[in-house]
Length: 595
Image 1 (tube, one colour):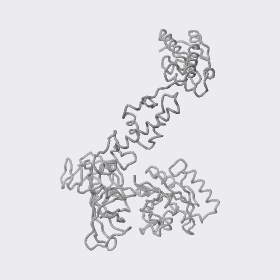
Image 2: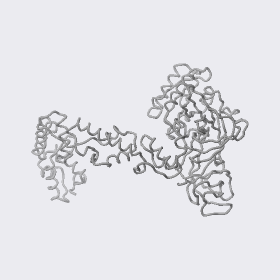
Image 3: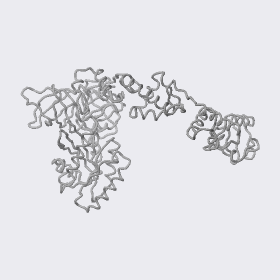
Image 4: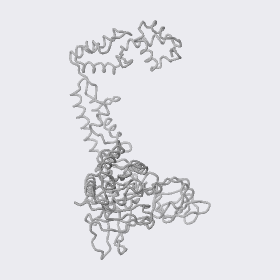
């Protein structure tokens, strides 16, 4: 079964909630105030069976600027955004702000939906489409579908559902020891202190002046003070009942179900694979069985899907901070009764479950599976997030863990690519470094490419050029003669060199090879490029530098330089600019000083 989380984004009154209702039959405006005012205030949730085993979960967000924070909470973690633009108003302020938020949150795909298409003439709909296309140009939505729909008439809704289904099928899987975690069960204000939260510290330690992060709202805060069992403490440890005084936030922004954790280490998830034990007498759970999911101090709606052998996939309507090994309770939706509980096996699992493989393994062995399954290995920070402990696996390359087989395979690919390049470009000393990387492992971290280059003696990297260690430039007889002619022409020219194009034309080989030979001489520093059009022999430049060294501190003008060198203004000005860049001379008004 494929699935995707879809979030709405767009200006107030552009029809986001109406669109979701038209697609799913679910009205996401739940509050009486929302009904009375006719606008969304809180996040709304819905789902849609796309057919063929595919599902879409919807997060509907309010469009009013006062509720942007709520919109951010809904947009975090979505797979696909519906950028809603009303045909009768086109792009508005919150269209832009919501779109920016989606980009900043790393949303990678979406659909531009032109709503209320029945309210305007077809020509205006096409104009709004053009405006939308221009608006998303250069972003992750460039080239994305732009569909016009009407919730009132139903026009375009079938095409929108089909497009969501297609994107759902193509969507990628959602690619210490004991990190601090304190699930909040109470938040209140204490006079003279400010916001205080309480809870049982389930892992790690916490102390005054420490920086913590509140999940899932992703707020970083400073700890003012800590109490353990009602008494001030220098620190609190796992297993202790803890009160934490937080600076920089109002208590009304904190709530039961949130978690204090180490900044940047963990993030919430909406999908888990888990092992569940059902209580005796509970009927078998079928796909999309709705449940209440309780973990830590949080409770959110979810849906279960059996995977076999006591394993299940639970899709949460709201993300929670979860780690493998966390325990939870499952309660039935109606009537609300406990039907079982279990343990998280994997957070944010791939589309095809690997829970059966991971469940019996230790944390280090799970890390090995994750590293082997990944296309280019996994960052240590990713393993830390997925497993909750600072564990490594495979071969460690800097901050990256990679399977040794991957290193062997790509080492061979690098060598094969270099051999082919040398065969096609025998006069070049090697292949450009970035060209080699993008050809062999374009999506791998740079650190792994560097490791491959340094891994064995068969590859040599020099600056921006990479070659097989055995590669040597082999010149043919005519190429050797041409190389000598090119060097001799510039040597004989002294400081009044011939034009570069004339030298190459007289070399005796074709333009491509002569240009390569010139570049080789430049890389070997036998020739020196002074400007785009002027190349000098190194002997002439060395002689010039020696002449200037004997005049250190001397102030001179262009005429004196021409007299010293015997060259014309055509060569004098470029040479002086070259000497300035080399810091052998320094400009002083219309004159220069030998440094």
